[in-house]
Length: 276
Ligand SMILES: Nc1ncnc2c1ncn2[C@@H]1O[C@H](COP(=O)(O)OP(=O)(O)OP(=O)(O)O)[C@@H](O)[C@H]1O
View 1 (spheres, rainbow, N blue to C red):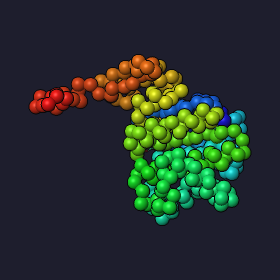
View 2: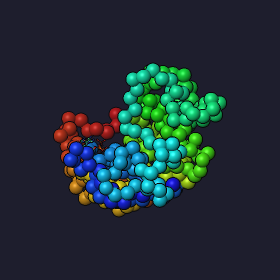
View 3: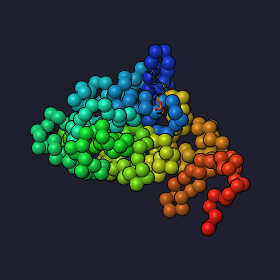
């Protein structure tokens, strides 16, 4: 599934939240969007998913204008994990994960749900109420729902578009790795993936292409090594003294976000890492 945005803008109540955004994602690729709070990342994901209509420009999925796809056809082609995964209602985890495929025969639905709950580490949680889960578990229950939707769509054609808005924000380090591996598995099968990430080192590690969004506009886009520079980190994120190194094994950049400015006031009383 190829996603293409051409000169896309989005405004609401006279405020421009996205301005002239263009990029493409092809099957097999992970593209990440990074940018400061309020840059427009979630808005961009919603416009790319067809949940919000672009005010100007075009969004297409395999050359089809997204606003011409019925909700049913759209649901077979793309699935999105939103940033907000709070739950007030007393659904079970199994109910949540199966929400997008309630129209399928029961056995088929349950087997799809069981497989995806297993993949996100919630195999034993199917009958738990969603309200009883921790924040990280709840986020993974919703991820299972998204994966179920994509698996169901697979029966009707090629692997779809996976849109993830901060999918690792509530996860411990091992789960962060696991979730980004699930995204990579999706692209290895020919799927397409667009992810919003705040963790710049994970963005460096997992992306084929990075889009830096600032104040609704694309500031820069390209490979991690071209995008994640000290200049960009200062200009866009306002970091005072970022350092960028290159991982010797992967040749990808990694960022040390702060230097002596952050630690200096605390130095003096006790060195942080002395042996006993
Ligand atoms: N309905 C709306 N009306 C007015 N402003 C809005 C509306 N929705 C979002 N905004 C504003 O648009 C900007 C972009 O919001 P968005 O949620 O896309 O940012 P983001 O980059 O995802 O931020 P974060 O990193 O904090 O999640 C924010 O300043 C937000 O307050």
